Length: 307
Image (cartoon, rainbow, N blue to C red; front, top):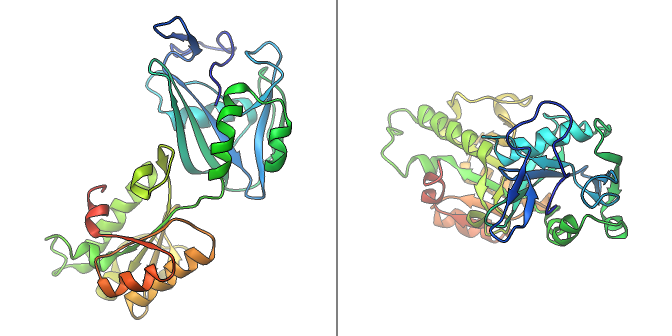
């Protein structure tokens, strides 16, 4: 992740964030409100890198698209905006994975790590790039890297194949609080899925998943059984009988045993290489079954505290 970005504001209207931030020892870094950039992989072992123009700080090196955050702009929005402006990355074409933060006290740089949701070709859209290229992961170290990105690359590389997945035993979670679920199980399940959908959008703190970095965006699978299958939530092409829901949240309406469906969902996640796989339930029998598969277990309060 770069220590400093281009020496001066980019072309066009100037945002208050397009200015130097100064540390107590005189150190300066570009971005009055901090900076952020996007490290995106294509799902096939390549990452998108930018060959920086010579006049920029550390010009001629390779790094990731990024820049100063605008006033009141969060790091993820800033990284996506900068990558769209500099490399033509489609704003709706990135599945967020996690963020890593370099905090110097007076200034922060946030690396937003994502995966391309669909194939796209980068386009040089401003003066800050000599080239843009999908670089094989194993070839990145052969390039002259921006010093900041070079220091962060080993840790970032180690996370590229990490895909946390949370499987939720909806019946157990809604039954853990007096939410009126015994009168309206489908309504309680609807409220739970709505809450998880909102949580999926903002992500989970890394420590909640036992991972490094700052924030992670895991995949979510919510299993509904019995009367809760009537929950008013979106479903995908599979209708009410399979997996569907909003991006990042899959809803499984178990045709029979909810426990069996949860075990199957956990098994599928483990087999797909997702990890860590976390099952949210307080059911001891179910806990033993999913732990045997390689998943870990958290109780309903782990989820409730974050909704």
